[in-house]
Length: 150
Image (cartoon, rainbow, N blue to C red; front, top):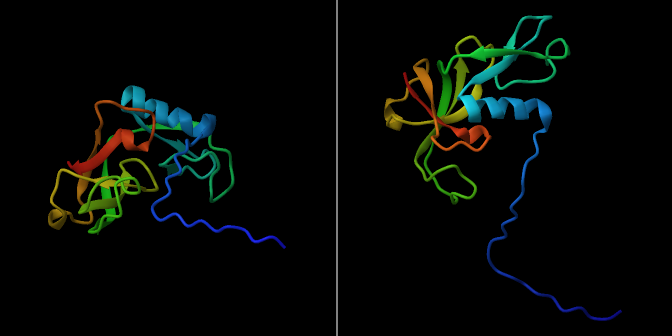
């Protein structure tokens, strides 16, 4: 067998890629981008509203094709404060920042998103929050900049 040279490269490897969400969830992101509108999907069989939207009900397996407009307000179900930074390529912002599960008014499920406009020590489970949208939106979940106290 021939001997092969071994090369070691110290550093970080960045592999940029694009996500393709498909027609279903792309419609959700278009509404956020173009109209600052949040929508979920309602199961006509068990009547649950899912946010983020789903195409199949996880409880009864029915197809979900009924879109429901939801308000930009909700309740903070739980949260965590991130106190370390690995780098903003991997994280949405520099630490410290808060992430929470927000259950929008009218939805039966919660969505994980950034919390802002409040000091981390003042965040409380059960507090009312509202979505803050970026001025320049690109058609992804970060078009919602964060949820702030309502």
